[in-house]
Length: 360
Image (cartoon, rainbow, N blue to C red; front, side, top):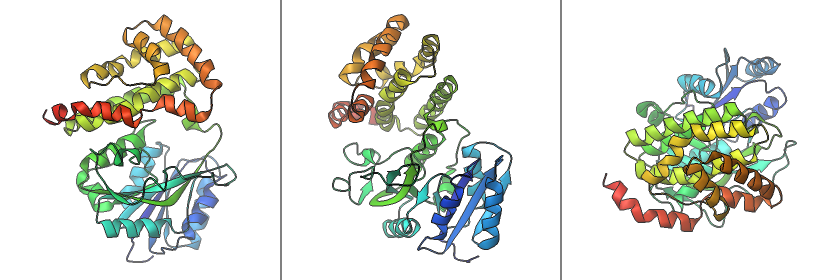
């Protein structure tokens, strides 16, 4: 293996035999050759482990870890523990890197001398066909230095996924930025901690990641277990922001996720009405934060529902949720998305209280 490893790429692998070959091939085709490829077999029950081992025999840059199943967060931590690269990147086993992803991200973080860099990404179909446009508008967002207190620009590219980024390994280890065993939202915790702890960050508009839109993937199944996990993760993330005295920044994170989780509850086909009420009761602490954080911004279509939720009128909340569910089925995706997230005007409204929170 190359002595001068510039980037360690960590790939958690669990029952991914359908896609893992393509993922590994995308790494072997990287224009940056000084990379370490860490494949973490997280107790796969299919042929994933065998495929990983066969590739390790062909290329000395590949290291395979075999471990008992512990989930994606645990697998990534195992990879971090043996990473030798100056920088770390993550690739999910069903996704792909562009051929120049490692080189572009390496050059960006070397040039910017920051703790992390965020890159653009693009959705692909299950068969690998690219969607028309990348996630972040290239005309609107070019290269710029990131600031966690800049809601007008930085906040819109500082997403919660770990895989469209490159991280300084020394920074992660010195600041103790690792994954908590949260399911789901392990990415959310990791990136939030990274943003809070980092001295500097940077954004580059180059597409460096291809995210596969896999039908019926686990992340799209909004079950009762999923919402229980989200509730637990949100508590951990909130406490992390509070412990690091970044409650003002958390206000924007909260505004971004508040309506999103409500819309997930509205749309899910996996919960009965009684289970939805159970979830709403679990999230009481979360919805109550809106008063403390001076946030009362949701899409107009959700305001009536949020009034019922905050007053704990759950019977009427369910009636309203069912009406909204039918409405959302009949509108275009862009309108559904607008219902789920705040607008720039919403953030401007929130910013009136920034100084008050900064002084706390």
